Amino acid sequence: MEQKDMTVYEHITELRKRLIYVVVFFLFAVIGGFLLTEPLIKFLQHADEAKHLTMNAFRLTDPVKIYLQVMFIISAVITLPFALYQLWAFVSPGLYEKERKVTLSYIPLSSFLFLLGIAFSYFILFPFVVQFMTNISDKLNIQQVIGINEYFQFLFQITLPFGILFQLPVVVMFLTRLGMITPMLLKSIRQYAYFVLLVIAAFITPPELLSHLMVTVPLLLLYEISIWVSKISYKKVLRAEQKALNQSNHD
Image (tube, rainbow, N blue to C red; front, side):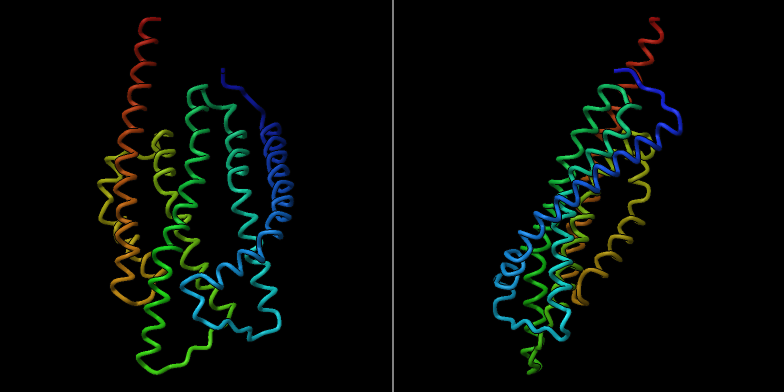
């Protein structure tokens, strides 16, 4: 398929149309989120890491606040693949046929990595952190009074960033295909990237070495995987450029 030239006004109109699609889809997703919110909150309250904790509401609005936040998160997660598709549909007219197919494949991969990041943080990291904190309280003979708002805010703080951070390989793959980064660049800034990831891990986890390592090691592995992904994408870019050059020489 040939690239399609559009005026600035047509671009703005197309973008507006795609945003309306996303908003309408999100409103329908809110209905699904409304139906799923109560069972999910009850599940999270009775999960292994929370079933021995008594949840308390210190303000009258806390349960409603948590209900709305969980509903919004569910709706956003449901909308994410559709929003990515609309983004792809907006930029695809300016891409070649092969590029369109490649970038379209990023959507399920991105959604999968987002859910994988949340699953990793919830099922592996979060129980360990909760257990560590409760053990500290028990050793100090402190009776914990857990606020439902504080509990869920802490849960969101641990899990949601991992869903975003696990997008790193997809972002690197995309930027490499666009020619904005190369595996050589990623290698040259590796030490600075490691430092940034260490800082991010420090913000996510409590001040304790083992939990900090449980976050840092996966993040560093993600960066190394991203370099490997960038190498593969970069080779494909070079092959495509060489093929285009050979065709132009034959012409």
